[in-house]
Length: 84
Image (cartoon, rainbow, N blue to C red; front, side):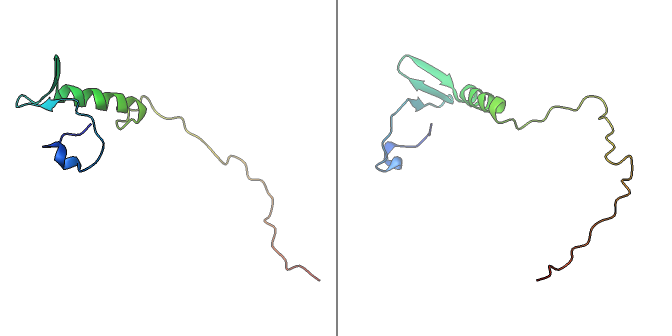
């Protein structure tokens, strides 16, 4: 959805006029209207559930993870050149 001063601003692009934005910041069409902030909030609300931009606050303390508790005792192997 775009707001343009006139259809001429779209050049030759195919388009469909949904309504007009009036001085009350409402998008109006015959028989109905919606406030621009309401439309924006609905648009962003739908996208927020699909593409979240707000992280939730972490709860509690994360569990401690120990990666290495026992040494293996193995020695690294060295690469040797191949013999022909």
